Length: 116
Image (tube, rainbow, N blue to C red; front, side):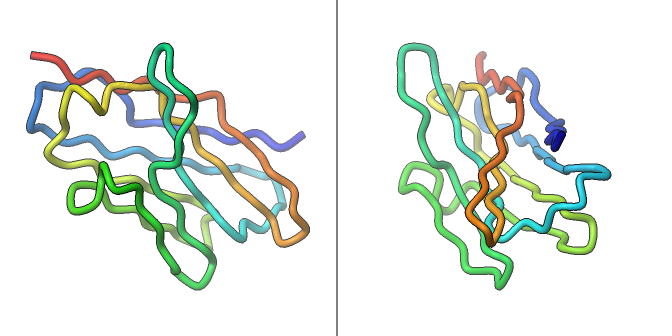
């Protein structure tokens, strides 16, 4: 069973930074697209950023210029560097992996809280 392990969430003040990580240890899968989604209370899950194996990147408009997604293909790991965090960024952040075969995997989520 493939398990995605997320880390890096926490509580920060507005303007501070966090770095999220997502890996799939021992899964044997090859990630074609790796991405981060988030879901705030009462809202639908939304795309934050995603990156393909050839480093084509897409960001949501709300995080452009503040968040940076990257990946380490050798380690099958994705990162999300989040700078200049705002209270509106408060949400559970989910890692997502899509394989070339079209299979999608989700992590259990990591909570990010931005509050003064």
